Structure formats: structure tokens, C-alpha cells
Length: 324
Image (cartoon, rainbow, N blue to C red; front, top):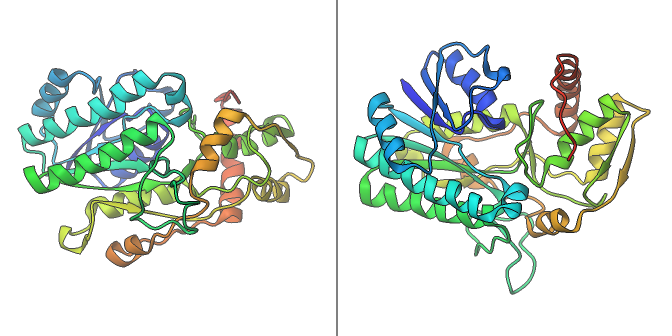
């Protein structure tokens, strides 16, 4: 199957390219930026420059490649999007429209959309249900969340009106040994990275901060499973998926299982803490479990056991991340 990725240079693309190539798909990876060095080893994947905010260029490339399926990963994430909301709107809103239009015009049969827990926000009537189900009123508090809500609605619209089979997932905060992209959940990854390289970390979140998180291997597998599911099995376009929802201090305790000397302190950043507090504390993913047999494989401690050696290798290779 010929598969095209937008935004392939980001955190998800790194692992998704490898999984698709391992399954012998013909992968065309696209991004505005050049191929990152960490992606250079990916076999079975070509790399093309694409700015999804350029409608003509997007349609031209889709027509050239003629993919059977598109994974639309290109996005400006929550924290970066609040610093530059116009850029977030252009990439996330206009870019998604352009990608869907290119799918419609070229005849791409299936598009996989990556949404986020950022679509949620505190409703006027009180806090979100815990766990939060798929269908609640969406009151996002960031431009990233606003554009992801619109993207979900556009996916449903194109599925009904234009026969573009759109489906996707709402990702929790994703954790992997790769460069994060400016999301508000990045504190969780840096608790691992800085514990390894510095012996500790000052988190920009309160110790009692609790949001849904997921280890990247589960996230990639969820994308592949929903992408390949029979349409008849799907009762909706976009699904909650969940793995675990630890407090920040519970992540610290898990890290200290492997690095007992690690020290963690907390200095909440008001802007990012407000975003974190607007998100669900946990997700109800029963629809995904029912429709396409979704089930996570990693809990917090299993992620810690697998991730810390990967972080050590990453740092040994010189892939040093900045905490801020």
C-alpha cells in the first residue's frame, strides 16, 4: 500500500515511518523541514518537502504520489501554538482543509487524523467527567485544541459528503525517546531525560498534575489499528484512546525505581499549568475497545523500564534535548 505522511518530521512520524516500512508499505514522508538525522535510517521511505498551508502544492504532491492512505500528522502543538496562534491556525486549520481537499480531488480513499485531548476543556456547568467519554461538549482553551475540534468535524463532514474515509484518535500526551514538539505534556518526558542526564528535573507542572499519557509504541499501534480497521466496524470517526493517567509525582516515583538518586522539584508555569488543568484527568476509551479491539500494552512502570535505556542511548548518541 502506498502511504503518505504529512508532518513526518515530528515525534509521531519518527516511529510511525519505521512501523509502516516494517510492514512493507511504500511510505512517502513529507514535512516542511528537511529529513531529520534521526529519520535517516528509515528504509522504504522517501522524503519530500511539503508545506500543508500551500493548497496548490499539497494537491500537486498528492496527485504526483497518488497515495492509497494519508496519515495527517502536521500540526503546531499546544504550548507553541499559544505563543504563535496565527501559525497554529494556519497549519492546523487551513492545512487540514488543504489535505482533505487534496484527498477529495485526487481520490485518496482513506485519511487518518491525529486529534488530541486538547479538544477538551472545562464546561461551564462544572468539571469534566472522570473518565471523560468521547461525546461531551468540547470547550478547548488553546488554539491547538480549537483547530483539532474543527479538524474532527471536517473529518466527519468529508466522510459523509465526499466519501473520504476519515478516521483517527484523540491522543493523550505521548512519551518517547525523541524530540518533543512543544506540547504542554512535555514535562513528563523531561522527567526521564533530565533524570538521566542531570540527576533531576524541575517540572513546570504541579506535583498533583494528572493527565492521560501514553507510550509511543502504543500510540503508533493505535494509529495502525484504527487505520486498517474495516469501516463497517467503526461507529464514529474519532476515538478516545487511553493508557494511564499518573500524577507528576507518580511519574517521579516511577523514574526513581530505576534512578534512585534522581531529585524532582516543581515550579508550575502558570500558562502551561492552566492548559494542563483544562484537560481530562483520564479518558473513557470504551468505544475504541469495542469497535476495533483497542487495548494498551504499557502501563507507567512498563514504560519507565523500556524508556530509560532508550533515553540513555539517545543521549549517548548526542541527541540532547532542551528542557525549555
